View 1 (tube, protein in one colour):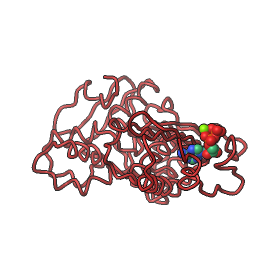
View 2 (cartoon, protein in one colour; view 1 turned 180 degrees about the horizontal axis):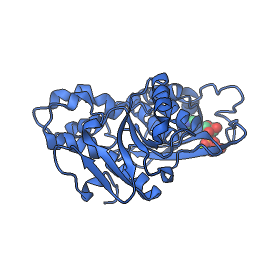
View 3 (cartoon, helix red, strand yellow; view 1 turned 135 degrees about the vertical axis):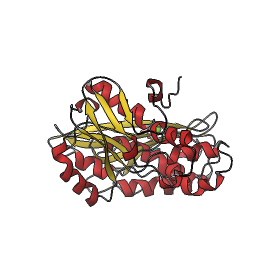
Length: 319
Ligand code: ADP
Ligand code: MG
């Protein structure tokens, strides 16, 4: 692409931290602490599929990195750095400047420096690929397979906001349009609790970030850990702006709504105090919403409407 190197220099060449080699060589060099393992995750964002063509580019830059560092936190990993693949139909400097600003802000919030990437011209639409790396103590990773019978089930942040925001943008829920201003940040500016997630390494058992809906994501933990769960609907942290919605809309958003980028994790009941203290230190709202049991499936108690097995299904690109 004409101007590829100027483009990178102008928008993405930020100073790398001490001990790093960042943008400008064949590879980036990232220092890793002895006794740790590298955690690597990648996500693709495709225009028209994951974001609207007219989305605020600054919010898009923020979210492109947020969804990746969210995966690091869900593994108990501390961010080390990220690389950014960009495929662009044309060079739009204003768009890129805003995108880079949002990406950089998230990079600073999460402590995940941009150390490299690749830039090409696309045939149609913007495609963004972010790969993030982190490190986790050798035996500390929060694996999906590590839940144990009797564990508490915890959820951070608030549920349902991003899902309803997306539905409002799609023209659903006539009469509730006024909610969009309050809900838009949940969809466009998720703030995954990454430092809290890495502080949970070695203290919590299993964790997952809620990207496809609480029930579907919790079910991934249950399947990998060969156990069941009881969830108390009345204990779930519902986004406060959603309280006036019809029960079926609300319940679906809370249990099945995706794009949350908060954590669902399990931990032994004797870790409660420690985990509450960690949450407070990190400014994260964390609450216990249920318990791991023997068996299969999820039993949701105290929900306004019954929850069936099919209700575990959240978003699936190929369904
Ligand atoms: P190579 O030929 O080794 O693939 P490139 O010419 O593609 O290298 O990139 C030159 C440098 O710019 C590399 O250090 C690469 O990591 C960096 N880079 C390219 N695109 C991006 C981007 N979108 N964000 C950050 N760094 C980038
Ligand atoms: Mg290249």
